[in-house]
Length: 487
Image 1 (tube, rainbow, N blue to C red):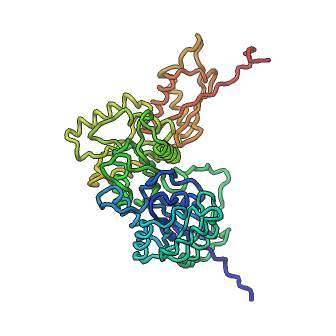
Image 2: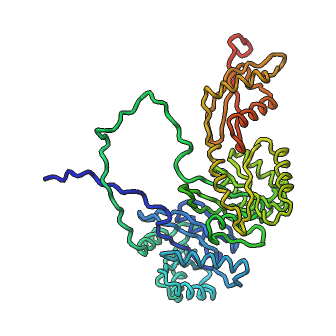
Image 3: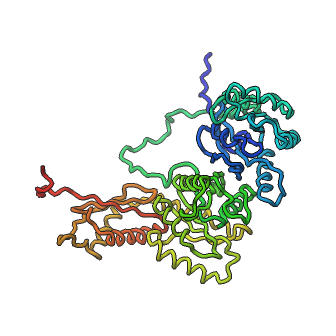
């Protein structure tokens, strides 16, 4: 008899946290970040011809021969005091090795085996993790011969690759997959019939209800000036020393994304490099860091602008806030180091007064005070992010919107332009993320900016849209009696 059971399907996809983790380690400037970018398939990590570009661990998903892995790019291994910057970077790399199921130990085949390679190869052997030796920069005819020197490290046969030129990567991917632990079998459940007898028919005339926001994690970008405490904030949210922190300004160079779970919600939080004034950015590496920070902001839903509360609002803080508004992101103002503020009421009022004067277009931005170093009041941040994200995704019903629009026109009539009054007829919301409205009417495109601000302020107050950019566009209607536009 034929098997008439229903087909089986996986219960749920495997979360990224359950994927095998592979760490790339080695001394500085051997091409770890270039290899990372090649394996994940995009330029995700900063690459420059300067030792020590990578400081924080950077994760990405890589699909290799049908297996998806979490790939980690780490800082270069160097001997240094534990309290120094390089010592903290090494501790972060060591943490990645402890969590990994496979370690890719990378060397520079052109430079040959150095004492540092021998030292850290001996250290890697003691970690009790499977190790795959990767001889990078082995392009050309002499590359394979140079890579053979790596046998002396005692880590097995080296895989010769050139991450910069894409040579040998196919062999490396195959070796990585062979060294991974077996893939767990997916649990299956019976699939329900596509049409159930007791299912209620769908009303074709029913109103479509849009979701509050698309499915997926809430994307957050932590931005601010150098040394405001952005990385310390991310560590406090995660409850672990994930990012390199310290008194030195500008420690974070690349944008690093991590996943955070809180009260059933999933957040993708990106820690970014500090944004200085454009005139002070000279080095090519810092320009790359700034570009990565701006790109992270463009991909975010909510920007958390971190300020050092002990210093108040700096002009550069306002420039960053204007950048957030220009990109159309929701914003939460995070006042860090609040425990070090003496007169808190006066400090808070001074900051709000400065913002109300300089950033009228982001009126009502939520403000959260905390200490990232001690963790005091840090629990207030994510609820504020949720609320800001909900406002950013808000939609106003057209009927309610036009009733308000009629009242607004009665309270303050449309202005005269060139001796004739504008005829503004109706308004609609064309999109959210951020809330965007369009006014239709005769010569509506001539609406003065001050009248647009009057309408935007009314929208913000009436429909409770604080702290998010509001876009107001105009569309004029053609006048059939206007002969000037006829050819």
